[in-house]
Length: 156
Image (cartoon, rainbow, N blue to C red):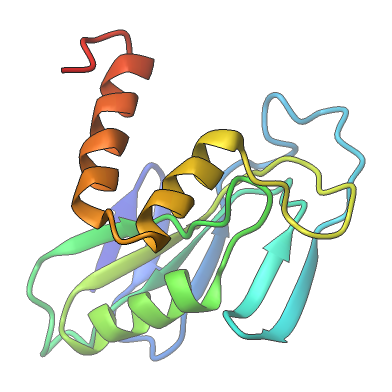
């Protein structure tokens, strides 16, 4: 069985993940990017990818007999400087695939990482500080309010 999305063809039940570049050449907006993509394996989070310039979609399609007709796109996190591609991407996709759900892991472009460590935004540090002090529900309310405010809405 074939699945076609935006001119990309995937084959169900192939047994392995299929990777497709989302742009035939350099992705628009990154024509002058010079950073080289690199992956660090065996971190506590599994493989982490830095300096992504070529966006891809990796398809994890279930066996035809188990397919539910449901699918989802997974965009792994990493504070916009890395992608936690194993733990938050491929591992989740494999679980969904085994349970009959077609999963697509999006490896999206991220900013160049120029130094060691991950610089935390002050809002993220404040959020994490509150959460570690035991104010988890308050942190979620604060986060939702902050997002609404940043999107141009009311914070209340």
